[in-house]
Length: 508
Image (cartoon, one colour):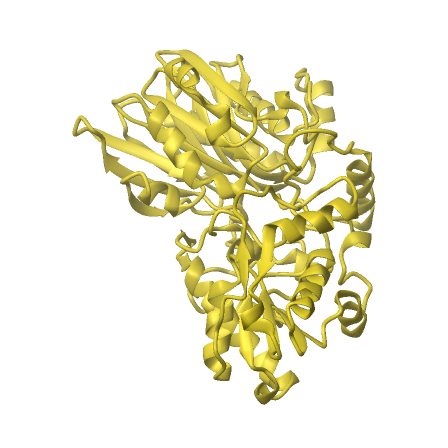
C-alpha cells in the first residue's frame, strides 16, 4: 500500500505535490519522493522517512517544473530498508520515463527473468516497481512508430502491460516531452481517481491521486475514478485522452481500503469510506445481538482511530452509550514491527492510555477495526482490566484475517495470523477477552456493495482466501513467507511500517 499523485499544470507543481503527499501520508510512512519535469529534464528527490522530514526548503527549490508526480511508500515487496527502492523510479530509454506505483505484482519474479532473457533489460533492485517501469518502457518501445508519441501508441503500450503483468497496480508515469500517463489494473484493486481544477494562473490543471482527499484538500474538483483497466493520458497542454486498455476488465476494489487503509473522508469507487464503516458497524451490531444480550454491555468503547464510525453505529443499534475510553499519544511511532515483543508491548502502552472513569466497574465492549496478530488486542484487553473493567468484550469490525494478502498490503505470514488455523474460542482465550465477536464476511460485502451496486465484488482475500487474479498458489505463499523471513530487522531509526494493522495513526 502506497500513496501516489501526479499533476500537470502551467504553474510550478512542487508545492502542490508536497501538499498532496501530506494528505496521503497515512498510506505510507517509510519513504517519500517527488519528481518534476521541466522541458525534458527530470528533477528528483527521494529518501526514507515521512514527507515533512524528507523535503526541506533546499530540496523543494531543486524541483522546478510544471509537471510532476510523487509517492509515499509502504514497503510490501523488495528491501524495506533500501533507499534506492524508494519511488519514483526512472529509466532513460525510451524517451525517459519516471513512474510511481501503488500495489504489488504477483508475477514479478517471472517478469524479471523475462526482461533479462528476452527484452534485454536489467533489474538492479528487488522492487516490483522497477520491473513494472521496465515492462512499460519495453511496451512503449514496441508501440512507438515515430516521435512524438501519439495517445494511440501509448494506449497500445498499456494494453501490452496489462497482458504481461499480474497483480494489483495503480500507476502514474511521466513520459519526458509528452505528458502524464495513469492506469489501473484490470480488476481495479488499488484506488486511483482523477480531478480537474484551475491553477493560480487561471489555466486548467489536471491531477491524479490515490484518494479523493488528496484532490479535494488541494482545491481540486473530483471528476471520477479511473476505471479498472483504463488508461488516462494527459498531454502537456492539459488535454485528457482516455481508453479502456484491458480485454476483460472487472471491478473488484480492495475491501481493506474501506476497513482500515483509506481516510474516512475519502470516496473510493463511488463509496464513501465513512459510510462503509458505518454500515460495517450496523452488521457488527447484529452479530453482537445474536451472540450476547446487549443488557450485558454497559458501554461501547472504540480503539482509536479507524474503528470509531463502526463503534458509534454499533452503540446506537444496540442502545448503549458510546464513550472514548482510550487516549492516543500521536507523538509515538507506529507499533507495527519492533525488535522483540517486549519492546512492542511497551510501545502499545506508550501509544494508548486508558481513562479509568470509563472502565471502572463496567462491562465494556471494545471495538477495533481488525485483529491481525492479536498481540495488541491482548495488551489492550489487559489495559481495560487494569483500568477497572468488570468484563471486557472485544468486537472486530472486520472478519477474521485468515489468509495473507498479496495485492499490496504487507500482512504477516500465515503462522503469525492469529485467526489462521485457530477457532474463535482459541482466539478469545489468547487475547484474554470474556467474549469475542467478529464481523461476518458475506454481510460485510453485502452492505458495502449496496453503497455502489455497479461494482462486481470486492478483493477480500485476507478474509475469504479468494484471489481474484487467479494466479496464486500454496507455493507462492511459501516463497513470499521465505522472502519475508529473510528480511533483516531494522537496528536503528523509526519503527518499520510493515502493516500489522493495529489502530491507525493520523486520524484516518
